[in-house]
Length: 496
Image 1 (cartoon, rainbow, N blue to C red):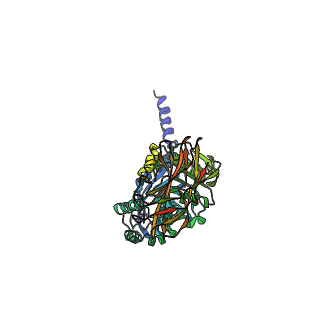
Image 2: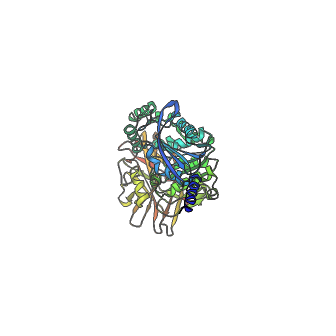
Image 3: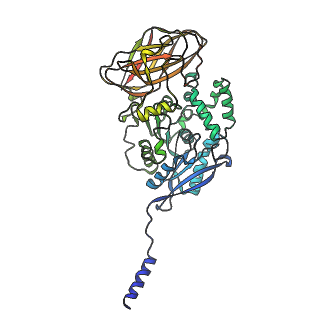
């Protein structure tokens, strides 16, 4: 017993003096106040990795969406910190909830806030200034792109459900996206403090002067600054996005010159990536993680060897890869359209659906916006049927309607809907687009519908319907007025 005591003491001493075992990688979370542009307090959830040494660590900044607080990305932030060793700062955008300031609609202060959060992350959270990424959904996504154009420290961007051109998004072809505008205005008033720009824009909108709001768009649109963006950019949007439709995104993506990736999939605004922000399994957020891993950490995960354009058909199917957006269209078929006439302006069964709801039903449950084409009022809508497709075919790209139009009133808004229609005349909305015309003279309207990838089944056909009333938009058509379409009109269908 006496001989064993010295041995026991020696063992205890060796245990006490031994270096501690390295803790397993994890993360810690804190709630911080970060000084934004001009010292405006921004409330943030900061998630830092543990068990990985003292850093510096790659830094990811996530500005919140319009109307949402910093808790929006906490689940995704925890995964990024725990699994990949990032410092992640998810903060409430200026003017909303517990952050200070007023909503300036992605104005100079809001964009500068991103840089101030990066400064804080480098100084206070062991962030690496040479490895900075910015991402977000919706309002946060637009901020990420604008920040990348302004701050060269931003090396990678993930922009989900983003706008790239505010005017094209909310005022397509001089037609107000009324449901979208009302939704954004209501969310801004309910969850934040509108600043002068937003208050003046709402006043102009209420007075029917939406064109007066347009000057705020260029400085707040990443498309205006695309040449200044040197970061690697991943964009993920939905085909049926009711706030920021895909046409403005595909044009912006094409203009980017650095490393880039485009993912378009079924759903509406923010629905495709919704669950991933909460940390749940999600293919969009998995791509976000791989994008940051490769471009901020140098991980050889193959994203640089994959096709940069990834498209999932709007009505279901697997991802399809292409080297460019243009390559998604293999050929184009042109169908002539006979002369037709809308005798009066009134609602028809042809509709684009409801913002957020219709696209979500399409994305989650494959329930499209439907129509019974035999019941569409021929006195209020022009209807053209293309030949039956006896073999399956995929619409892939941007359909275009070239219409020779003679309006019967000084102001006319037209809505073009492209449907896939079965032998019974029941149709599913493939894509659509509005256009507002001024004057009564005859003119040729080259109307680009929203881009889409849609699989048309054997035995079905495509049907184009044009009417003058749609509940989603604020149209200008005059009740009782007529619209004539010339015989030299045509429909161009891109096929993949």
